[in-house]
Length: 155
Image 1: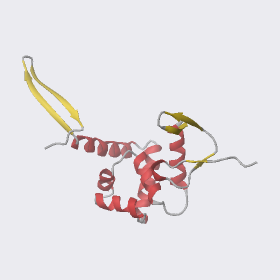
Image 2: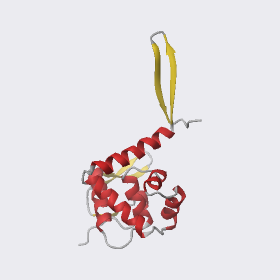
Image 3: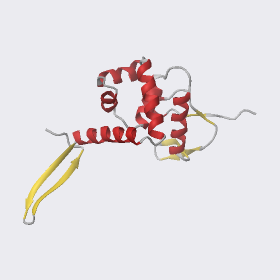
């Protein structure tokens, strides 16, 4: 008897199939899928992508980037390349071999606790967030106070 497999197509992945660890659920919006230990599942998929032979498909490259929590812009800065280049790789599927190798190394180093890589990736994420924040400062009877508002483009 063959086990029915479930296609896991998060972020456009095409070749990941689950034997178990999920269940089909009814929601107010229709049928859906609930995954057990989603963090462990995505970690395992990323490990497999990093270790697989052959070039990464555009969706696999994107999946690793997303799980590094890097925007296209942040990854482009890290690779000393243009944001549009990263977008094109993920759209066209033509990821240069050097970029393929770099994202695998980045993911592996980040997972193995390389603090330098974690700090660099974290700092890039912080810089990106700062671009979409506004610091509002006001004077009060007790002195100056500030607050940060997220999601507001700086002008």
